[in-house]
Image 1 (cartoon, one colour):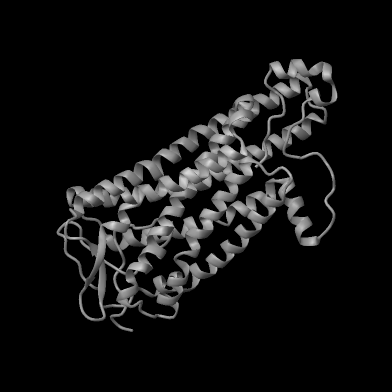
Image 2 (cartoon, one colour):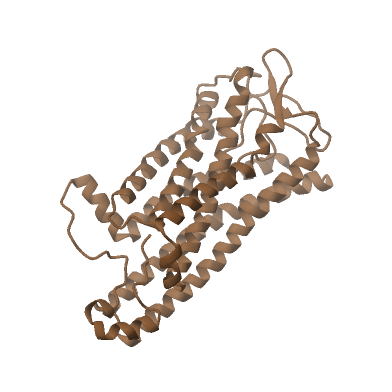
Length: 383
């Protein structure tokens, strides 16, 4: 197999999975070469063994998440958004995983006639689904902010139908965002058995890479991350204000301390989800900025270490996918109850949804007007 593996694509084709082993280029001078050496052993272990195993784990956990949410009686806009994120994360792993297994574990070289199809499935499509996952996470944050800080407005606009439409539009925008990737490249044969996936001759490589990466940095990394920071900060403040008002006015029909605890659980979950997204996406933007600097100024970096950093960040992104399942299991009572019912086939107990704070308006109609004026009517903190 010596010489059968081709060098890693250097322009970060997909930050949701590890770099693809099919092409190489030096954008500064437009040259390309085929690496005659096998990839490092750690790359073969990660791509050939770790990634396929993680893909199976993510498929199972996200399938459980989707099944649980779809069986909940309170299935609504937020659950639809979370199902969209789960589907996106699953596809991001399922598309490239079989090719990783074949190329790195079995060490089988994909024939040149199938390289284009392989790149579309293992590189371009995961880029689209990962972009959609980030944007859908931002959509969920906006929904939560509306539910917490503007509950009356949220009741009108954050509907299941509107959320479904927004999910479809998100995927359309993600496809348009990366559409150029499908049309600017072609296969260049180095020999009868070796080929590289290279830019078409009419493409200015430097100009394209700078423009493409700059757009990705702004729209996929920095704008969503900054928005998540702002939205979550506002939600934390909003949840604290609502909790304090409920305790002061005694608008809760149940024990006030339980409402405070539920508020804190939801707040912690929101902070954790935002922290995970920021932790894995901000380094992606930084690495892409380094590549843009290379293409703009010809700056020299230790590209070997840069590629190692890229692989580490991509692996962290992949490891972050199953974390949502752990968050749902640890912080959502309804999720745990539905999952337990599905696993144990025990009858569901009828009880009030634990993720909705019930005001005294439900128990005492005379107090309803006071609570409504304070904006405290049933602030949904459902997932």
